[in-house]
Amino acid sequence: MINRITVGVVDAGAAGAMADGLADVLVDCVEGGASVSFMSPMDKQDALEFWRGVAAGVARGERVLLVARDQAERIAGTVQVVVGQPPNQPHRADVSKLLVHRDYRRQGVGRQLMEAVDQIAAEAGKTLLVLDTETGSDAERLYERAGWQRAGVIPDFALKPHGGLCATTFFYKHV
Image (cartoon, rainbow, N blue to C red; front, top):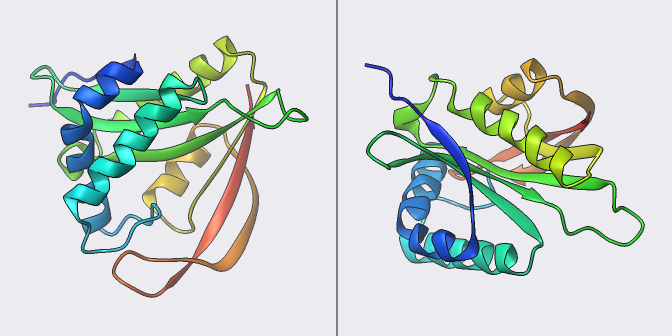
């Protein structure tokens, strides 16, 4: 059975209340090999601290947090739109930490989250989005299918969570 997934914006209070579920998604992604700034083994306390920081950024209006949940309200995935940019870049936002729990992959969750990113960015008056991802990853293919343009690849940009260097591809999209 395919889960029905809903995607919504989460305010700072709800982000704090969801920190445990969000931490589970982050830990799952890192342990599954996703290169998303953390190393394996991923400590749940470190993941909780990360999400507390995200909630604080949401409270300051620096970022928008989107969360995908199934019918039982289990968190399937998440992504952030970093709208707080320097004064010379008010038209731009960064897309950060697209995470989909392995239990929900290949069900359109990432696509739904990225469609919501486009809508949120447009509502915030952003006309240019940028992101980076591990070269050769499933996420890279997702972004290409969603109309993102490849800007370039930097070799040996980051460490994979289980060790070893990986290249990073930078993308942009006009919305």
